[in-house]
Amino acid sequence: MVPETGGYAINTQILRARTTDTRAVWVAAIALPLLLLAPAFWNGYPLLQWDTGGYLARWYEGYLVPSRSTVFGIYLHVGEDSGFWFNLGIQALATLWVLQLTLRVLDLAQPRRLVAISLALVLATALPWLASMLLTDIFAGLAVLALAILVLHGERISKIETCALFAFIAFAAATHSATLGVLFGLCCVGWILWPVLRKRIPAKGLAQGSLTIATGAVMLLSANFALSGQFAWTPGGTGVAFGRMLQDGIVTQYLRDHCAQEQLKLCPYRNELPATADEFLWGKSMFNTLGRFAGMNDEMGYIVRRSLAAYPGWQAEAAAVATAQQLVHVATGEGTNGWIPHTYGIIERYIPAQLKPMRAAHQQKWQLDFTAINHIHVPVALGSMLLVAILFGRGLWQRRLDDLTLLAGTVTLALLGNAVICGVISGPHNRYGARIAWVATFVVLIAVAKRFGKNAVGDSGAA
Image (cartoon, rainbow, N blue to C red; front, side):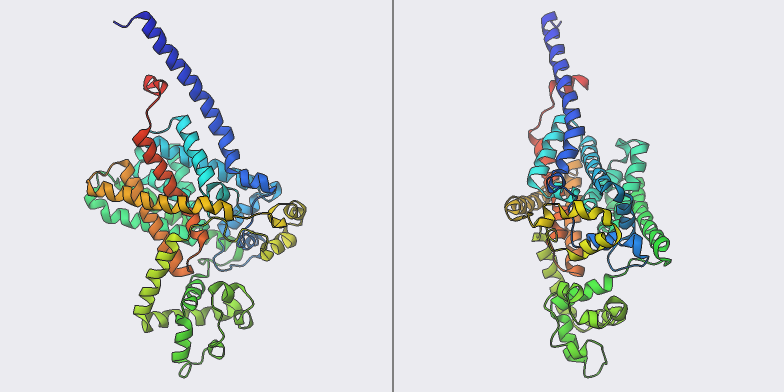
């Protein structure tokens, strides 16, 4: 029998623990979204990026442009009247929702643990900068976690949560082709492994995950038709791939080898092509003179296809190098500085009411510098990516496919798929690495919590 005093002491401990957890819930619900948006609050305006203007313009211009999702453009348009704070609110709440849902399905849902892990992500990763920015990047990493929950842990969530995850993943896939490609690749790997791992990877979950990607594709096609009258995919894949090949020297070599036999628009410029894809596609190059994408799409596609056949060894080597480089390009803040004239021009032309608060922001006064931040973010990101791959490898070596191993494997494959898609097609950029590297840090923090964390008295009592 338990003495009354002992039982009273235990009950008191339980009540105190529950009171503490209640406070932690309120802290998580109120303080964490605000912390996730701390960069935007400091800036005085949502953070802008070089590409932001292209998305904003989709609602107003009524035609498709390369690599600019109309779905994300519509999403931004919905928040215009709020100065885009509505969009940032959605991004912060979606982030908190996916983080807590991931912890919950892994039996780590204690509020204090959510607060501690979230604080670590805010302080040491790009996550708050992504949540504070008007760009698709915040949805890339969140979609990977959401897909893992839907596919692997569908039985642990409610029907409402399943529907919400389904819609969220579809939307994320529609905001950027690279995000869709990573999610599609994860589902393909899941189906390949399913015959062997059917006890760990439910067929129902895989079917739902695959359907979200198809829904995202339909969503994008429908938005493109609604805004432009064209039931077509967002253009630009060929041009972006051409830019990467130009940067690797492949385009120049092809022109030198074939201009004597082929009449190409770029032949007169073969000895004066820019050194980088960004200079060619977005700078003041002969690309403008030759009609940009409208005038060059067919020729760029032709050169891409012929170059793949003409230099297969070179292409394979360049792809491997680009993938490796993309894996280590993880610095925060690329394209988020004071020099984004196209985005400024779009806001001035179509949303003039936003000019005053935009121009008053620290970013527009060149007061935003990521140098010191990246002294922390880069080593944390690289270390986390290495550790999450080790976690996955150790689980495979020990033949222990528990929840942590499956999550680490999902994130490892997502990191690799992101590097292949972005590095090989677009060329390595820090932006593409930073938008997903924080997920590796999240998994490492989960592993630490599982290894060293112990349930509080209140948790065990509630159980």
